Image (cartoon, rainbow, N blue to C red):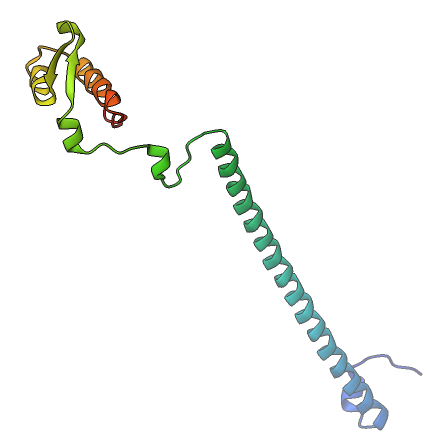
Length: 146
């Protein structure tokens, strides 16, 4: 009678039983190696997919920045000097003559106009507009604070 119980070979010392036992061990080792290879392939595939997603996202952001620049939209990128124009020094602002429209275009110095604004003789908005206009006549653009 044939007995297919694999454990019977472990107690059987015949040559066939020993060969069967070694074959089972070899098969178990092969199965382990296959599992390790499959796990390594899955890990490599996951890493490659993660890198591909990161590259795609990076390129997408880069392309959005380029498109925004082409459309003239300011991004949060660094400010370039050509985007700002000529920078006005404090000395250039303070040496600007200012014309006050509400006082029949009376021309005063920057410091006089500043004092007038502080005393309420002219509004702050009128002072800023007059300084911006005076700077424009000298070829400067007003600072963003104006």
